[in-house]
Image (tube, rainbow, N blue to C red; front, top):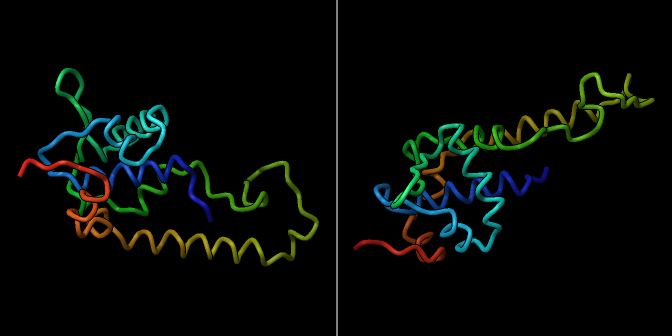
Length: 149
């Protein structure tokens, strides 16, 4: 399975924010530049992360974004489920879709793929954002995040 750029950018944003001092705000521009990704795409990602409650957005002068909850409470599997458009690995996963496959009545592939997807998400459920950013200093160095030390 391949994650969409949207989910990838969502996870990268959360990693960036978790690597920073929780009292410091970040900007979309700062994150986009650190990862060399599109600011426009990141704006949509940040909006959605705010809607699902993972980040807090503060508007106006001196505003920015930061994690809304501690990294230990942000489950990676949950974030992937909320940011991926769908998990239809093959057309026959679509309920009521127009796709009909001649071997569908006897096919075990659909079952095998469903089990694989369930296992994939189950592994992601084992991780929190804190697990991914266990060494924040290393991330700060690689991302060029300045600290107030």
